[in-house]
Image (cartoon, rainbow, N blue to C red; front, side, top):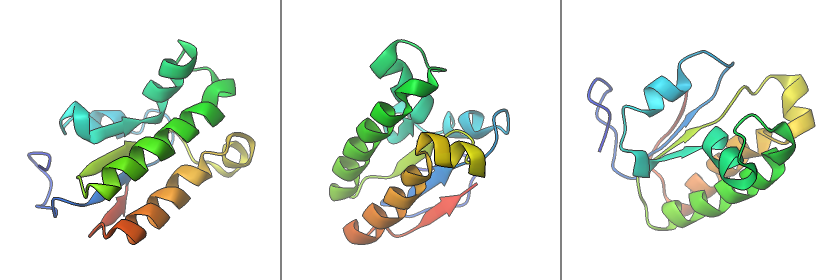
Amino acid sequence: MTAPYYPQMPENSLVVLIGPAGAGKTTIANTWPASQVLSLDALRETVSDDAGDQDATGDAVAALHLLLEARMRRRLFTVIDATSLMIERVQASGEASVARVARGVGARSGAVGIAAV
């Protein structure tokens, strides 16, 4: 259930990959099965046909919350691949809520570990 070169993590862990664009978050996320990864960029593309459409972030975050809560209820290993959480963008786009919800949902559902990269 874990990526080949990472330490063994409990099956019901939540891993949150955050950082600036180009830092390697998606590269790391791609080491896990696609079914375990919730990508904010992919969800932006799903709701707007454009992964770079920042105006779609609110809808993408709402979709991410729904999927995250469903996975956490089932105690499934989940990786969140979220774009840059720099302060200016956090306030403008609401991406901070991704990490906040991840922590809250993880705690409520009994996720064993949450890591931010």
